[in-house]
Picture 1 (cartoon, rainbow over the protein chains, first blue to last red):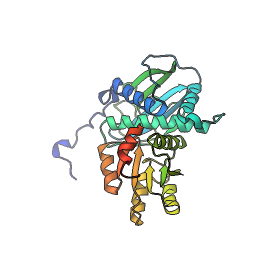
Picture 2 (cartoon, each protein chain N blue to C red):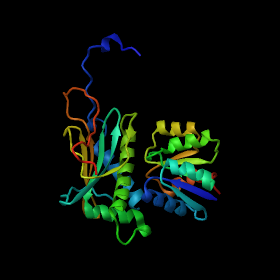
Picture 3 (spheres, one colour):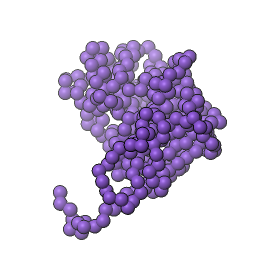
Picture 4 (cartoon, rainbow over the protein chains, first blue to last red):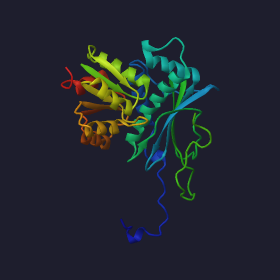
Length: 183
Length: 120
């Protein structure tokens, strides 16, 4: 393929930031539907902000495409455990181990992330879910964030770009979580 | 009948199995697979009547599993249960020989709509 003559020598087009691609209401709707389907019919997310406790856990999936970033869910560690019990239902063991929580919380992030990916321009690929400390926000202008409550406990959904703000040299895509955020 | 449920998330396998029961498919044998490679092996070992598979899995994706099965001559009925339900993925699934694609989050009604006619 050859570039059209007028495309040669032009500066690269600005990358789209997430607020131009998806709004908070859509993210809230995706999260709400996920909760009702996975956690339970009566499990509503209430759009009320709250202060996260000190001991938090995050689960996220990466989206790589025209927009590249992560869909990150963050809540208190105890709330993540409560979510796991709600998902497992009668199959929940008496004592949850970290693997159970990582699996359940990661799967919720996977479903929310998959639906966010479907709502923004593609084609994009979705990574496998990861659980740990939240990935760092690289560009505050490239974030769509909602704060909700589940069973009275605060939870944050952050759709956040993995790349620093422009202008920067357009280098090869590197690991968006190189600051030790994964696991 | 025997249904193979493939998902790398144990929690999601349990939710799929629970939804199958809620949708009325409660008298079928269930076999679980942890990824596409495991699903491929278990289709040959267990000879299921239907495969319900996640798309995005380590080792071998659901799509790669379906393509490998068809290349090996298997005609096992195959449907996706995945968090990505874009038109592009539905086209890819259909082209590879999948009967349906159920997007997560799903309901028991979604299961009935897609599975009725595929399994008794």
